Image (cartoon, rainbow, N blue to C red; front, side):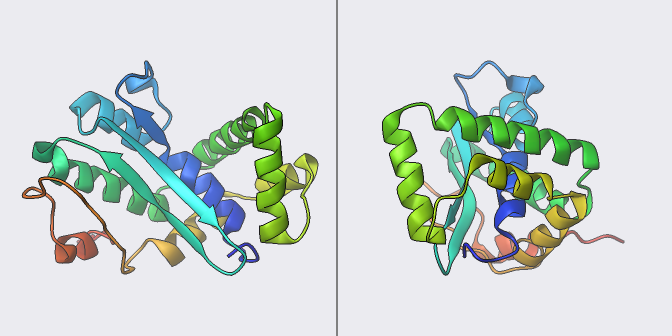
Length: 186
């Protein structure tokens, strides 16, 4: 939830995993490893990482739209991108993600409707509106270890939920998903 120590590291994790759309021009130049793979291997039409924080709970995950024939590969790359952050997060990519996150947050407040929605969400979640400098200070306090700790707590070797719609013959089953929520190193 909103009072968890994982709130701001999750925002950075969300930025690290990223989002991508087939119509975008980023491709190989995307900062997200998953976006690079999705572009180069044509794994999906699009994907986006979501992070919803409420007063006492939250929801974090990846939403994707893909062809039925690429579901297995897409799931492999998605889980690999998520679990990688538990073990191989670098200070450089965390710093880049923090800058990208702050810029995105400022751009989302362009307009009265978006600002009103942000104010309402913060009041419901935190009981008050956090100022931009306060939010940025909390984001700046996130380091590589906080990201790894959060990823280890919420991604690595955890039970995950999966919902899917459409032709799912190539979608891996839950046991496959569960086994790939951790890296097996020999």
